[in-house]
Amino acid sequence: MTTAAIPILDHAPIPTWFKVGGGADRLATPRSLDELRASLADGPVRVLGDGANLLVDDDGIDGLVLSLKSPAFQQIDIDPKTGQVVAGGGADFARLIQATVRAGLQGLEGLIGIPASVGGACFMNAGGAFGQICDTITRVHTITSEGALRVLDRSEISYNYRHSGLDGIITAAEFQLTPTDPVPLRERLKECMAYKKRTQPMAENSAGCCFKNPSLSSDLSLPDHEGFAAGSSVSAGLLIDKAGCKGLCVGGAEVSHVHGNFLFTKPGATARNVIDLMSLVQERVHDTLGVRLQREVVVWSRHTAPKATR
Ligand code: EPU
Image (cartoon, rainbow, N blue to C red; front, side, top):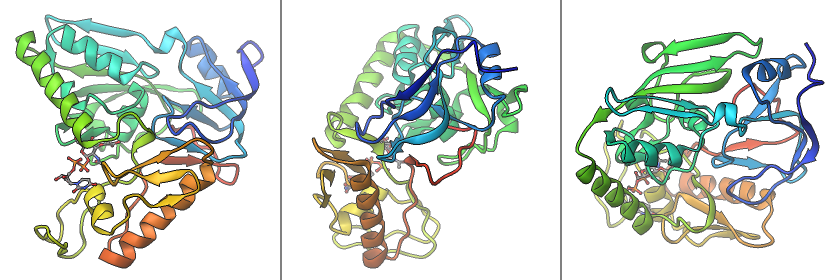
């Protein structure tokens, strides 16, 4: 098989929520599973979701980037009676949440405000204070880098905090939601959205939370705050705040005053500014509080090998 029939753009921009960084040497948007499979024949690829949790280095990336933004991978099918939902990997996660709430189906509403494609959200196990996506997933459809289609049952996926262990490309996901009274459900959606708007800088160019919430290896006491016991999970934003990093800047990249785990870009910022700011924050949190923060944001650069994952 060759990629000849698939529309491929050379030197294409990669839209990310940070709104900085370089483009793709080659970007393909397959229009079917067959085209997707054919595009894998030439070697490893990188898969672009919504660009919501992604930072691309300033000089862009080599190799083939796949976008699942064609209609074939953006389909959303909802059965309001049974609560069964199937969504394409390239579908917009917010659109899926809105559609399920409109259909009176409970289960995804607490995840509103997390920027993602459905595939990206399943891969990262997107979540927050009001639940995580794996709570409602029943099956995930993937295609391996060799082009084999697989349908994995939820029990076969090692989901835990911000981790799925999935490899390959997520082409679709199935969910089991609960039919419920749509009126309180819509209220709940509004409450979750209001919480996000109150506590997060939603209007800035950011990738949401930059770091995973760490699980502590030893007890931690924080200034003007209750302490945390070893083994507990702590908000990375709280740690960044307590380490005095809010407002810290590198070039046009800044740590938000609203929520410490949000790094955002201003006009003129570069991807390098964001990378350096992430390192600076990690260093300060480690030096001040002794906790190592792990990046949640994925960084693509020419110096890292592509894997067939997002
Ligand atoms: N806090 C501070 N200062 C800060 C940030 C937070 O004091 O700068 C305190 C808050 O006041 C609160 C606690 O830390 O008492 C927890 O904050 P929050 O409710 O914002 O939760 P989080 O653990 O920081 C997680 C997810 C978010 C998700 C929220 C709400 C991670 C890394 N982050 O944040 O997910 O929106 O819960 O559900 O798990 C994302 O993944 O992109 C993301 C934004």
